[in-house]
Amino acid sequence: MDHQKLAQYLEVICQSGCDSVNATIQAMENNQPTSITAELQPEEQQIVLQELKAIMSVYDH
Picture 1 (tube, rainbow, N blue to C red):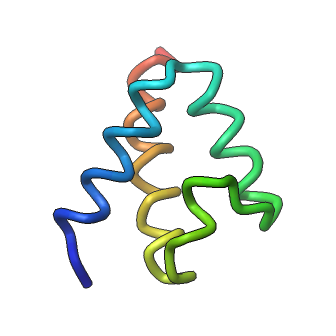
Picture 2 (picture 1 turned 120 degrees about the vertical axis):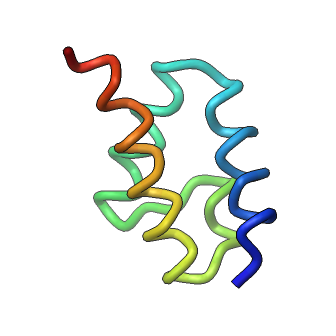
Picture 3 (picture 1 turned 90 degrees about the vertical axis):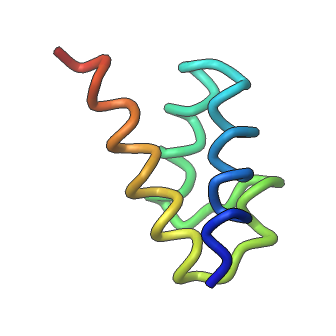
């Protein structure tokens, strides 16, 4: 697994803003890959989803 590749995907997703990140999380939780995450393998998608949730948890407080 290429962790640098996943970091790049996270960077691209996060640069789009909080609303877009939340929409991506919701889509991924509903097994609806986005144009960005569709290129990832299922295991990679799960890692990206977990990381996005961790990043956004900072804003939940």
